[in-house]
Length: 188
Ligand SMILES: C[S@@+](CC[C@H](N)C(=O)[O-])C[C@H]1O[C@@H](n2cnc3c(N)ncnc32)[C@H](O)[C@@H]1O
Picture 1 (spheres, rainbow, N blue to C red):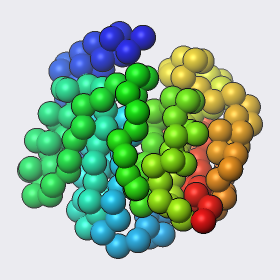
Picture 2: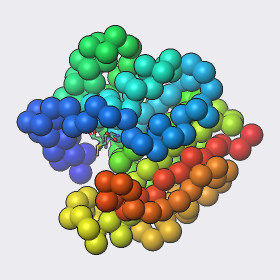
Picture 3: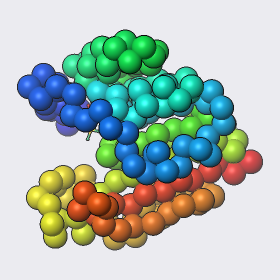
Picture 4: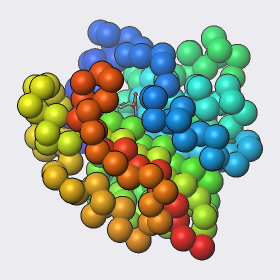
């Protein structure tokens, strides 16, 4: 699966370039709860729209992603924005999460179910996880992402068991996507 994923994403980044430069709306909503100059890991951060916005706001951000093409785009965009974003090429299906401890982990539109137990291990006690993923209901209005990449009904809450939930909700976004969004804290 991972080789296919790398090829798929490399191809998309090579042919389409940076997909968006706008940070995710939910990230902007919750970022004022992050500590100043937070050490942040952006998992599956791709071409860096969220990481660059966070770096512009004074945070120390590392993107981990399987796609060298996505990471190259992120570095170029960060340089153009005059900020530093660290990158780490890693297949999170087979390699562990980069060791922290991280103050914040950001996970947008990238879902690897097995990672949720490990998020807890690399977050510092009291650290925050920001997560956003489309749910199966999204198929009522959008063909993509396909079902294996969508949260089942209520699954978001299950994945975050053990976390303290500061925000956890599902609904249609202004972009007409049905998404689960959560801000969760590692207890301690
Ligand atoms: C839908 S994009 C989301 C990009 C970014 N989080 C955003 O919201 O704009 C999914 C990202 O996950 C990365 N990815 C897919 N499989 C991966 C894996 N096994 N390990 C690490 N990254 C992976 C892809 O390269 C891609 O950049």
